[in-house]
Amino acid sequence: MDIQEIRKRIDLIDFEIINLLHRRMEMVLRLRRLKGSISEPEREMEVLGNVRRYSQGIMLPEFAGRLYAEIIDESKRIQQQDLKLIGFQGEHGAYSEVASLAYEPSLMPIPCREFREVFEEVGTGQLDFGIVPVENSLEGAITQVNDLLIETELKIVGEISIPVHHCLLALPDVEYRNLRVVYSHPQGLAQCRGFIARHGLEPRPFYDTAGAARMLSDERPQDAGVIASRLCAGLYHLEVIEEDIEDHESNTTRFVVLEGRVI
Image 1 (tube, rainbow, N blue to C red):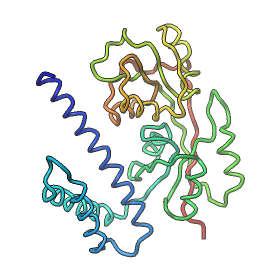
Image 2 (image 1 turned 180 degrees about the vertical axis):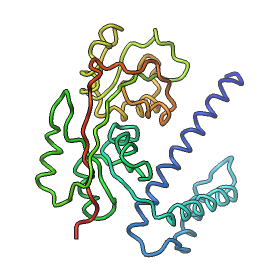
Image 3 (image 1 turned 120 degrees about the vertical axis):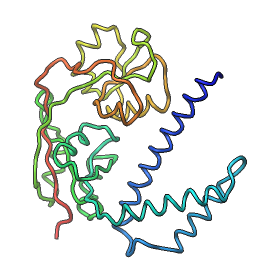
């Protein structure tokens, strides 16, 4: 490896470290709802002891201790802000997160694996709000979400409709003409069918648009792109090859916002 390649790898590792720290802070915010006080000296000492033990080889345990002492201080600062959490289904960068930021930028988006998890965690008070899609202008009603809305006692306190603009994303420095396949949620692939055909790309379904972007960032296949939101480009260190690649400009999705714990 030459110096530029080594620096690129260092930059990528730094990107991954910051992403992991973001995920840790999200867990810290969730944890705040379950414990009595922000400061827990015994737990802090346990964490510091763990990271010192994890520090094997080139990194000194003392350095890891100092680093995590700062991380713990930042965690407590974040917990003291009493941020309001809004859950969405999918990975960061999902269109549900885009909708949550458009609805109220001060809310902290928290990813959930399934729609049911959004409902459950709002109901138990782990999340203050949830945001879920109920209808797409092209695909119609989202049946799973509407079934959950019938079952739940949570209240709908707001709604927002957003245009769904798909982007073709790829790894930095990958030549567009070298792309052979494109990953996305089946609906994302269907909504960009014309673009995919014109450019001779092989569509490959993935469970989530943002999940496809995260996979591309993690696994780094050089011949693959993804169809996802523009937000995913910044979150997963990807480049926007082309914007607004959907076949229909009128593609919109309506979301509803669910209120927190029901008394």
